Image (cartoon, rainbow, N blue to C red; front, side, top):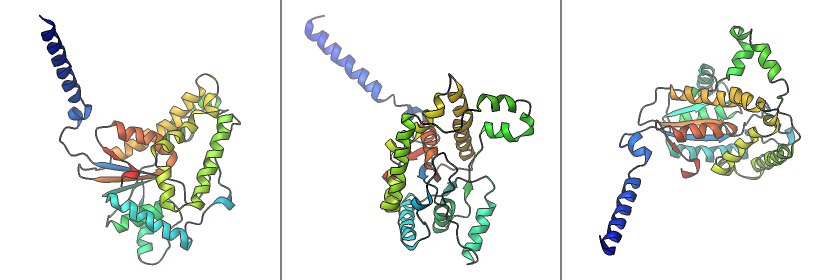
Length: 287
């Protein structure tokens, strides 16, 4: 074979290889032309400031979500979320959301005000706006919660109590100090920026990614395996259970599912919804 033919053969081989690679997207096989339900993750701070997380927001730094100014901002945020046109709304609440529905009914009847939390201010109000007949609670406890509270695990409970006795979410490491500064910055945004801008910031990919990093420092570094074992049995397990509860809802291919949870959950939930071919994840900033 002469040199010219060798070059042509080589170029043809490159063309075939690149064509095959272009056709080898996993989605072309796993999804193809079928319609899949869309999911919008909405990471939020807790409007009512229950302060159940390791980082506590001082009272003087908290916003009043029911103030006239913030209610106008809530409305602007709802206008933005409504662009997604959700057909199902999932909130950080237990499976029995009957109490939310009863509050919704009393609110419609003028008998009760909505609570300060995001379940009411965003979930219930958007459910009403979109004409939906229910709201879904998909929060979950972890396997560690079960071990601590279910008598079936009584025999092994002392083992895990001893194993994780030093994991108290308190640390003075340099990274913990940096994350506290980051949390203070985020909290300051709640006062300085309109609510919609705060949510656009909190739901950025880089903020979600680095926010998840807070779980990989401090007590996570205790011993050799204490951190990985605790985090997998508590935080990862809880969020995988949340994902499974959403997965078990009666979701149809043309559904548009809005998931409103504390922003700390998004580091894991986002990975699940991005990875599974069962759903299509819509980015918050793309609305």
